[in-house]
Image (cartoon, rainbow, N blue to C red; front, side):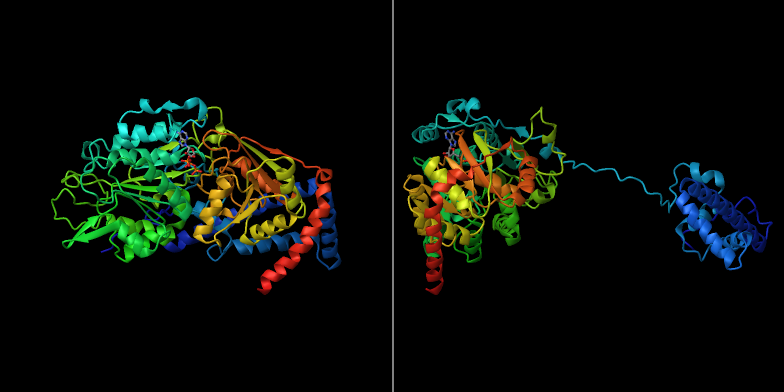
Length: 621
Ligand SMILES: Nc1ncnc2c1ncn2[C@@H]1O[C@H](COP(=O)(O)OP(=O)(O)OP(=O)(O)O)[C@@H](O)[C@H]1O
């Protein structure tokens, strides 16, 4: 027995009284008639066309004349053409022409139904229709964030006005010179504290707390907005276990965040440990836990780590236990998403939910799934993810890789009622720039770049300058050249330096002993060096995120700063478009006249000649 019965409508004649042969003949006649009508329409159209294009008419006449010369009468010619068309149209089933197929279909359907039959779509309608532009529609949590002010100076909140902070923390804030919270801190600190109101073991009302994402400009104080509430919440713990893990992309950033955690944990019993390869593996292992009477005892409450070193410790079972983890901080989150191929997050999640506790114990943990009465019983220690970045992606697909649970977004990117362009439905990401930043671009040639840099330092006295190049080689050669030129205290910074040298160089730059630090993008992100007056992009950055992080090394914490980008003529158009699209408030042109550089040219030429010898020597050694 067949599952489906397909009844084809073959026209009004189909009442069983007419034979199949008669039906096919009638259908064939109908098709031929249609083809003739079509041919007539086609010829009429051609006549109209020739009337409008006389040149073509002349060609057609010439062609007809040629036919006549060849012994063909015009009438015959016409006949031959229509015969050809007719002979094609009598075999419609073999015909591959799509338009013919369409006609056959409209023949089989009753005429009145082809245009008007509601609820049916004719397959094979090949008319080209304009494709409507699809705007990006974001999920509600991304489209409607909690808005953070970008104007730091006019939106300071006294630290005593933020509820829930204990006396010890207030004391630590005072001793670090902090009387007021910045806008991002005033919004995010209470939100994290509120999510941990019920203590460490359960979220609010027994539910898992919502994850938190923060997108705020460079230098707006994002670090304290997670350090302060984490210390406040963990302060009441009884047993020492790793309950907070902060993951950062580089050693320098891990060191910086470790320093902040350690300084605010002072006066509490909390222990902060760093796993970033600054110490030997064994030393890091010893700082994580100890074994006494056959029992493991954790020595760390808060761990600050780079993903590589973290995975090392997890795979080598070095005593890092994440089964009690309450907060997972992912700083520079967009960069961390890019490094997700290393699967560090899935390994961390595996370690968090690999609970050895007995079923029914309050320490039992399962990953968030559908909320049912069974899944909420018994209550379990919740894990909350906290994401921070100045350039957090608004791409939901990328964010999905982080497995966020009912996320809340705090962002300064939207909420400009005056700016329609800030709408999240636009296809590209837009970011906020620090308010005190003034951006310039400087038209230049390859050979004028070093002289321009010298001009900014020696003539305009803009130091300390943080100068970015796109490669280690350029940073190294520029450093050598400026040393040979003399008169500038310069240093280079790249991943080629040893960790010790990197630390020393950054310290000296911060202390003002170095006027010009030439660096690769190794210090482009997150590094907080106070007093950088000016950032120079010696090489234009390729990506907008790189640009935002580089120029964000100045104009931090509500201060002012300058950013200059050297642009070759060929780079100007694309670069300026990229910066404007990303939401820059305006980048101005700064022209340095050649006569301003002329007095340095002689000394520069000599330095260049010496540089060739130095590089040769370096290569030989
Ligand atoms: N409430 C505050 N009062 C005074 N200074 C503050 C305050 N909060 C942060 N700062 C200072 O502001 C500077 C920038 O802070 P932080 O490094 O946290 O910025 P960020 O938003 O993380 O920047 P980036 O996106 O570049 O990493 C730091 O030097 C910090 O000490």
